[in-house]
Each structure stands twice: as structure tokens, then as C-alpha cells.
Length: 164
Ligand SMILES: [Zn+2]
Image (cartoon, rainbow, N blue to C red; front, side, top):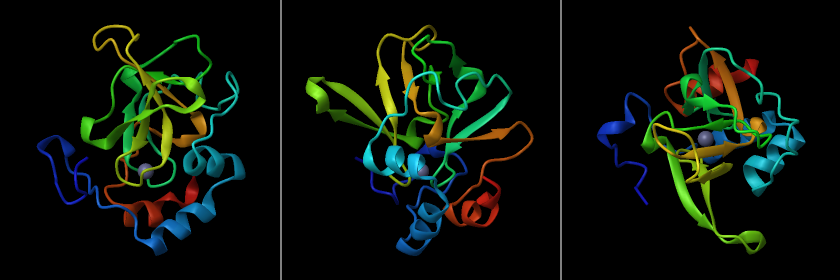
């Protein structure tokens, strides 16, 4: 558990200050019902249905709620599970990992480190080089094509993210 103000050296140029209640209200308002269910209520989208499953374009995958970059296209791989899968986070500091004992399983849940929204789970059965498999819901992510820089702060995302 790192405090929001604790900027680790790996956090890069991104501002990890969580959304204010007002910012959060604006951002939640933008979400679809399914996005809200997954991001805010720990839901899981149906497999093989997510819009980003087969996306192979170069770019960045950001948290759909707050815009923090969470994954890079270069680490995405075809896992066969039906959900977008990655071998590594954008930055370790951008994901929070929490043990999840729901549904009678012991899993590790991945949350956006900035806004706390649910992204998916991580399993230790991924391919090299990390051996990790971050299994993420498409609706938890916003894809930013190469050339579109991720928003640095929540406020930038509030102002720029209207297009998503
Ligand atoms: Zn977020």
C-alpha cells in the first residue's frame, strides 16, 4: 500500500493523485452501464466479447475511468482466454495488486493505482519475459493509438478524455 503522495521513481511523469470527488463524478458519468459494473463493482465482462481483445494496433492502454496508462501494446499477447492479456504493466506503480478470495478462488486482483477501479486479475502463468499474465477487461481500458500521449493527470483526462 503506497500513499498517493508517495511518488516512486518508477512512477514516471504521471501524477498519481487520485480523482477528487468532483472529478470522479464527472468521469463516472461518462461510463456506460457495463463499464460502471466492471470498473466500480468488480464485474467481469463476458469472454471473447471485449472490443479490445483482438486489437493489435500500437499504442497505450489507459484506465477507462481516470486515464492512467496501465499497459503498452508491446506486452499484449494472445492468451486464448477471451480477455485482453498483457505480460507487464506500463509501470509497476500504476497497478495495485490485491488478494481476491471471491468465488472460492484465491486470485490477485489488479486495480488502477490512481483511481482504484477494477481492471482484472494477474496470474503467474504468462509467457516470457515476465511469466505473468495480466487478464484485463476490455471495458476497463481506453486504447490510445500511437502518437496520442496519455493524459498526465486526472484533470488532463477530464479535459481531454471527452472523446472516449
Ligand atoms: Zn484509474
